[in-house]
Length: 195
Image (cartoon, rainbow, N blue to C red):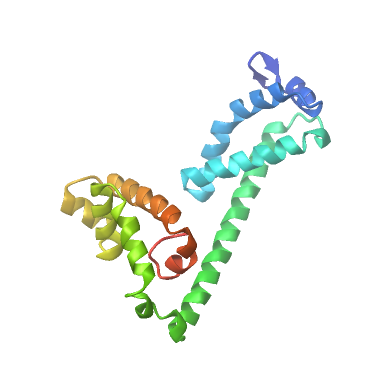
């Protein structure tokens, strides 16, 4: 039987079933790091893995009155996180399929022709949002998304690591998603940003 902070796991589970928040917090702190590492095996993205595990623990707490005392809590936690991770992957595949369908539709329909938007208000908003980025971040983002260079090409050109390039692009995308939230679907459709 697993001992957590000097208390047997089954005792913590029984206390959790009774609504003991401290017992929940002990279980959370003990299992959270390992569950995040496990979720990353499925979704790769660290933030997404953390989100999956946090969402699972929220549901776990909400269902605490209906939990059954069991000596397989670890198996339950890991299989639940695995299922949650697989559900996220399914949802992402559905979103990708939807975006491909929209892209195909846009290729055949004038309304979705990106050329119509080049001189529009959107272009100005995109430029304004890009201008808010820190200098190095903006430079890397423009090389990637506007000039179409690959991350390793940018790293070589700027004499920085590929990881730095990835981090800066990620930072830029987060900022732009906030700045351009009204246009997020359209920009994803154009391949300018990822959802």
